Length: 585
Image 1 (cartoon, rainbow, N blue to C red):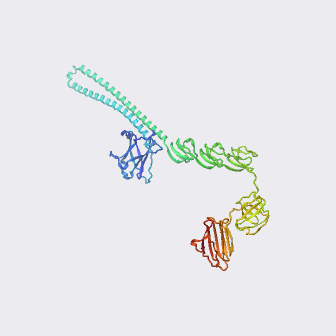
Image 2: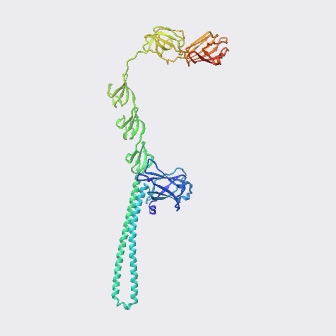
Image 3: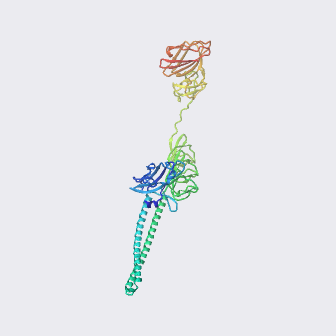
């Protein structure tokens, strides 16, 4: 683990005010099930309990674990240099690294990839399990070669010790020779033998030196192999950088991008393949398409640049662009895929006109749908057209005239009229009768006789007026009666029919006592409203029959002052009775 720490400089950056967050990506495609992390302070072997790490495992990314360390805001700024985090899985500690504080004032935590610092100071992003496996492999290889070098060095040391010992023995022999010069002559042969032995030892020492030189060369070879392994690791880091992805927002012109930068362009996501400047226009050759999206562009326009999956509306149908192109002066269906059809009213058919599928045209009263894009000829042809509505037969003329005069009936009253034809008439149709006004067809008697009702429109002739023969009769009006009856003066009796006047209103002026009040055609819900004004000398009233009920059976207290007003409201509560309430004004 010490060797691994020398190889890997792990730096986790976070927000001192909030938390650390570090995404860990695993090249194996799966986060280890026993992945754990602990935070330690200095040399204390006990994990810091207030800084217990946790992992967030996104469901959509099985290869991603987000390391979250909460609570660093509880520490003093000086304590951050003594913190380090330890990651383990597979039953052993895999790596450790110091925590560095980020003393920014904002609250949002900064999220970084796993970071390695290269020899040149550049920072790259790698998969955690991939770099650990690579570093452990390099470490094992270096340890193995260092072990071989140590064995060679130990052998050289042993041989050197032998040479030193022999040298010391030779020195002792020389000293003995000087002290015993008298025996030199007699022992010449022995000395010669010793000299030969010394030469042998010298040759052995020379061989040991050659062996040491060979060991040194082997050590250099090991260093070269270690350097090659380090270069391979660097190449792996470069490959990891090339596979990175960093979202940069919407694509911008004249902007420098690097490999792995992600942008949004035309509602589609792209990843940069090569580093360089974006230029003034988007160049797809420099980008990989990650996810295609639909880009609404509104109504189709001529001589306009469109991109793949641009969405336009043309003649009430929706289309998606199938490639990048510039539109011409007319719509070219081969550049588009229709995803929603709509009928487009194109008016009356015209010669030498460009029509498109699902245009709707009319010709001599019939309607047609265009079945294929085409330019019409000089004369109408049903080719490329589908009949969807044929012209009907000519109907009857919807007007006639009075064959004989009649007397205008009272409001909501009826009269039998003779006309030229009733072929186009039906009960409930509102008509305008010249000289009479707006009336309602109550019923059709025969081919020339119709029963008309006075529906009391403003401007209608007065009741009992003579309507002359020859007046035009034609459809007109809403057919809704005006239930406000013209004001009248009464002094003897009053009669109303709720069957024909279900919501009748009238203003009356009493010029005498009304002894008889008849309310016919009662049915639940029908209403009559009377505004009663005192005329003449005043003190007039209306006498009601037993079918008119008042609250508590009390008599109506009329305003008897001349000009005084009493509002009467009649509500039919059955076919035989009506409830009367009033307001004395």
